[in-house]
Length: 28
Image (cartoon, rainbow, N blue to C red; front, side, top):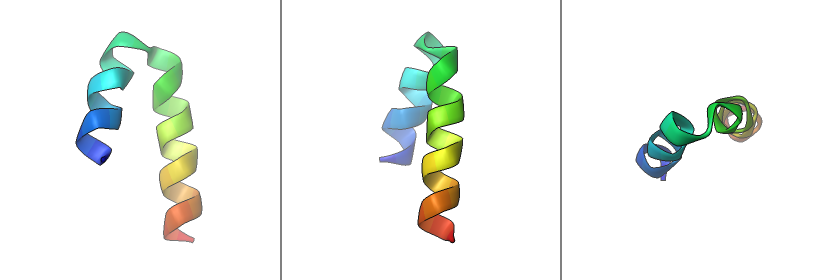
């Protein structure tokens, strides 16, 4: 799933912040 998020992040810069926050919450 991380790969797909990264791919979308390329098209949507804002998605990067969402992915980072999501990954951080999952990690915590």
